[in-house]
Image: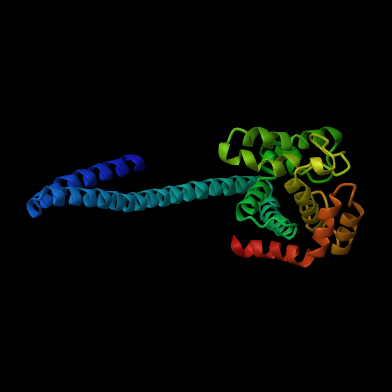
Length: 271
C-alpha cells in the first residue's frame, strides 16, 4: 500500500476511535450542559494535538522510507555504471584503473577549487567515471590498436563523446552527468571536439577533468606509447595552460598536486 493511503487510513481509524470512545467517556462522566460544552471544547483541542503528533510521525516515517528507497535506487544505478566500466575493461585493459584514478583525482581537484557540496562532488565523480562510456561504440580494431591511429581511425575515435551523449541522454538519472563524457576533449583555445567550445564556455567539470585525464594518460603506458617521466608530464601541462587547459584549473592542480595525486592511490584502496 502506498504511504499516502496508509497515512489516511490510520488517521481515519484513529479519528473514528477518538470520537466514538471520547464521546462515551464524556457522556458518562459529565451531565451538566456547561461541563459537557467545556469538555467538548477540550476534547476537540486534544484531538487536534494528538492527530497532529500522529501525522508528524507518520509523515516522518514515510519520508524516511522514501529516502531509503531512493538511496537503494541510486546505489543500483551506481552499480550499473560500474558494470559498464567493467565491460569496457574487458575490451580495454587499461580502462578500469584509469577510470577510478581520474575520477578520484577530479573530485579532489574540484574540492580544491571550491566545490564543497557533497551532491555536486558526487555528480562530478559519476560523470568522470562515465567519461569513456562512448568508447563502447568504437570497434576493437581502433580502440586497442597498437601504435598511432590513421586519420580515418582518429575521426572514428573522436565520435565517442557523441556516442556517450546519445547514450546518456536517454537515461533520466544520468542525463545530468553529461559534462565530462561529452566535453572532456574540448580545449581552452577552442580547437577541441566535438563542439569546438572555447574558454569558460566549456563546462567546469570537463575543464578540470581534462587536466587529470591527460596527466594520467601520459603517466601510464598505453598500447600506443610508453609512460612519460613525471617531470616531463608536468612540464607539458604547464606549457598547455591557456592553450589546451583552463589556466585557473592548472594553477589549482599544481598548488595541490600532492593531495590530488594521493587521491589516485586512495581510489585503489576503496575498490
